[in-house]
Amino acid sequence: MSTPLMNRQFRLAARPVGMPKPGDWSLTSEPVRDIGIGEIVVKALYLSLDPAMRGWMNEGKSYIRPVAIGEVMRAGGIGKVMTSNSPGFAVGDIVSGSIGVQQYWAGAADDRTAGFRKVDPAAAPLPKYLNALGMPGMTAYFGLLEVGLPKAGETVVVSGAAGAVGQSVGQVAKHKGCRAVGIAGGKDKCAFVVDELGFDACIDYKNDSVKEGLKTHCPNGVDIYFDNVGGDILDTVLTRITLKARIVICGAISQYNSTAPVKGPANYLSLLVNRARMEGIVVFDYAARYHVAVAEIAKWMKEGSFKTREDIVEGLENFPEALLMLFEGRNFGKLILKVADE
Image (cartoon, rainbow, N blue to C red; front, side, top):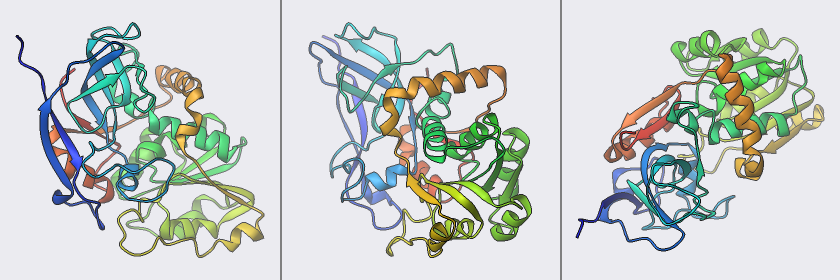
């Protein structure tokens, strides 16, 4: 009789107040259960660490139910099928889906919450499927094209430009004939955004004035603003928008760990004056069309005109500290946790 696989899991132990702390997690271990007809076991290889995870830890109504106390923390990932009782998946298949912060996932192969789909490891390195070919890239693609509605020649500004979503937004904008201006923290990140990703300019919010940077790099105003940070930067950009501008609300990382009420835009009347529109983007709304975005971005990547950067932390046990990197600005590129070798 074979020894069952042991599964280490990070479970939510308490709802954080402010920044998540070690006591908000419990690291447990249990055997991977036997599977039945139509079920699979997936071994986690890489897990996606995203700012949205902080919101999933809070109680209250949102676009997705909160992670329950005692539940394995929700996380998308790339894994390998280890055991299969499903005709749709074979042992050895590489899949993308909601694995959770754990070593193994076991359940129905067609579980809609997990949403497993096969990916081709020969087409791109696996971490790319958690970046431009995964949820961040899908968010950037559909958020900009479906909500931002860019027209060639327009100026697109994106905050968090060196992050997972931001780096893709600017490159999609350039491919659609727009001028792309990033906002990022630090000279190295700004240099990467311009020199590697091909943005037209990048404003260093840590060392320079965002207001003055927008005047310099967006002399005719901002037609589309893709917001990943909220707070003061959103307020500043609102003073520079053009007539009929579109503001895409993707995230507000500056607000996620605040113990005070969320700071809304003080300059929202600029929307009225400029007859502008502000609209949110939740990537799951476009799930049925992910293949369209993946095909186009993969084509650009193959041509060498679309680049990505991943920041990979190794070891499941490092999850709590790695997650904090997002909120302290310590990651450079898409943050990924490597759980096991491929």
